Image (tube, rainbow, N blue to C red; front, side, top):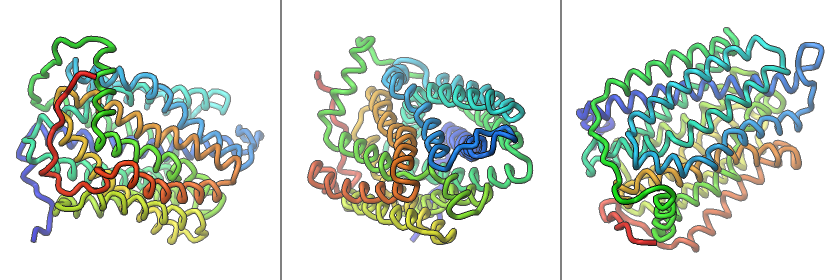
Amino acid sequence: MAIAPNLRVFRHRAYLHYWLMRVSIAAARQMEAVAIGWQVYNVARDPAEVGGLGWGIEESAFLLGLVGLSQFLPVLLLSLVGGQAADRLNRKMILLIAIAVRILVSFALLASVFLPASYALPIVFGVAVTLGCVNAFVPAAASSLFPRLIPRIELPTAIAWNSLGFQTATIAGPAIGGLIYAFGGAEAVYISAIVLACFSFTALATAKTPPHEKVLNVRGWSMVFEGLGYIRRNKIVLGAISLDLVVVFFGGAKALLPVFARDILYVGEVGLGFLQASVAVGAASVAFVLATRPLARRVGPWMMWAVGVYGVATLVFGLSTSFWLSFAALAVTGAADEISVFVRASLIQLATPDEMKGRVSSVSFIFISASNELGEFESGVAARLLGPVGAVVFGGCAAIATALLWTRLFPDLARADRFDSVEEQAVKPA
């Protein structure tokens, strides 16, 4: 039995460059997320005498939710365009432009640290909107590019490595970001993120990727509608995408972690970094196992059970007043979510032809972004109405109910057995 993940996929040098880009930009994003969340929450909670707004816990949590909403709305409006762009334009160039924009807005975040709340908050929200625009184009281009860098038979291994790298960055990013924030302030976090983003740009720019093959004889919005029609007809893809939307939309607690760190668990910015990293600790552990021994049988039941476990662990986190129990519960949510993500991503990639990957990825990301950024807004609203603990408990119950409901709504997905039996579904007229 293998004791380490299969490294053979990295013999494809273009994929190695892609993977390094993905890991470094993920680490930069996670570090910035810690700084943004703590900066915004502190500005809202601090009294007016020291430049803050002097708001209560519920109102400040709602402001965190608005940051998520600011990132989601551009994704909702532009992701279908981003999917079309990924199928028509050079995917590598789209990613390079997106990283360059990220570097520029990181400098804006750096400037916001030295400004009063009346200027800093508009800058942060402006950055959130800009990042939302970037995120509307990145996922479709990235998800469509990497399958062309490796043989089809190695896709599940590459997906596991993508996830392992991402989750490792998600562990290190928040933890290191929290430590840097504690000792050097938000400005040190933003400078570190800029350095990582520059490395990411260089890694991708030096990758020798295959020439882009444009989709022919389809233009404009007809491409968008063709992509939507394809997803509607492919029940496995539709079920997998929508499952993530509902579960994380209601069950995610990420936006409320600054609230728990400061006012429930009393662990400060360092504890916040470790809480955010705890999800990735569980996810990376499972990703390592999947990279070593990918799931071979009963992939659909594995995914549904994982969603149920995710809901139970979310309930435990919401009710916990112990830092280490909260850390462990979040780690379990990460482990369970990783199984679901691995199965979902593999099924979508294997069932979708290359000429449709950009548009399918864009719709998938709308759902993913809705479950994350819009889910952060939902968390803020729920915390305003139910309190932070009530909001998380409600989300855990919703995740459990979703696992049961989707088993009935999408039986083919729930009963899916082997990846190697999945075939690409041909593109047909809507």
